[in-house]
Length: 254
Image 1 (tube, rainbow, N blue to C red):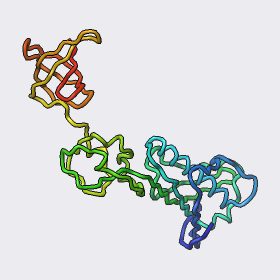
Image 2 (cartoon, rainbow, N blue to C red; image 1 turned 45 degrees about the vertical axis):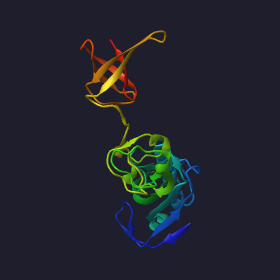
Image 3 (spheres, rainbow, N blue to C red; image 1 turned 180 degrees about the vertical axis):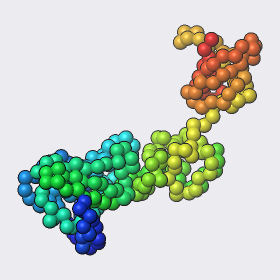
């Protein structure tokens, strides 16, 4: 633990001379946030509970956003004057920001009911991950292949919340607009390539595993793999729906 001097306030509104900063351990080193202390160092009590709460939030976020996550770091800052407070004999109550992005600057209210006191603590949460980035400039409409991307470790910030975290999500996708070289790729910048375009002649396929009939048709809508679109049978003129199964081919349902 190391200390840095800054100014801070506790719940009573008293201004305190300086704050401490504590670089903490990686995600798996969790402490139970609800643990209560009958005695001991109140600073350590608060720091352990806050660390556990932040670690749990980061873990939940990373579980919901799978990727090549690196161990994260926490730097907690709170008033040094908390050592004048009595250790809490009940589980500490720590506010959180639910499922919002847990990285960067975070602030939490810490409340003890016995004895009664409230303070605010800040934390800097550094989250890093290996993400795919572009190896070259990609023009609008380009189809991304394995040679177009490579891995790089970056600090994940709030603006990266919709970043693509795996190569599998990118290979075969088509860019909606140009993307600079050496850039992470946002989900909003790529889409599945169109296998069928509106107005083009296509093959209509119908039948079962034992019998398949094909005919010609016209796509009334554009569609990517697995999308349902409307098509017109060129011979009968009938409009039906179907699933895009290959480039230029639609499985129809009569």
